[in-house]
Length: 282
Image (cartoon, rainbow, N blue to C red; front, side):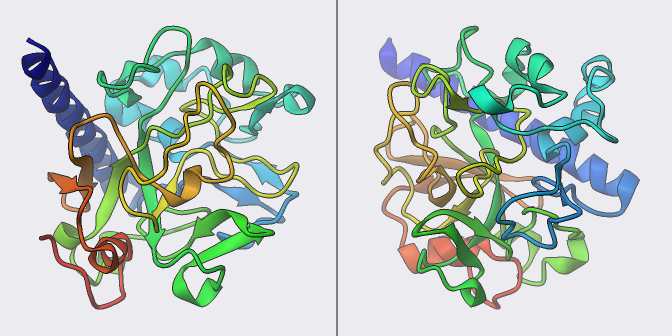
């Protein structure tokens, strides 16, 4: 019975990713580009923002009209609202109250035990890029402060990105668009420093992008549990989920593929980048 339930959950998770990918395609059709993972400005001049600037609506809010969620979209101020992280000294963010009170199951995988009414969780992150987590911006993956809180700028959607289908020169069927994550920081693991599916960016304590990740570490290699401890220093480097053996990814063409935990790490990282001239699905 448990195997049957998990098979159904995995299928439901895959279908949800397909719907999100379709929403992103429709957003592209209407706006002639994919939404950025988050938009930071005016101080945010690129993907590796170190602080300051406004914190605009993340991709997950911008695609709401394309998910038949127009009424929810209208509750957010996507023009001038502040979508900062939720922590004790930033609860003045203008969209914080809506974030903390709104659950959206379209972003939840049913296999995740944290996908409950107690959380406003997201299990689906845009792939901001791929590469070795060595702190070198030239690889597409870069540290913000110290040796943690990474960002990437060589994927389809990252901070302040403006990519189109034409930008994906490696081919949309060979490039990650969205991946499963079980690492969004929850209030129960850090009551003063957490995120929701509608969170864009933290500025205090160094940059942290709680709504996106890079293909840097092997799938499910991160063992952090965001419901019981702080995972903000590692969540941007890993994709992971609760399905046996691997993780669902939506590709740039909208298809969903199950990527094994044992995938060659170099190939996995290459699938995260849009224009490195490499990367094919196994």
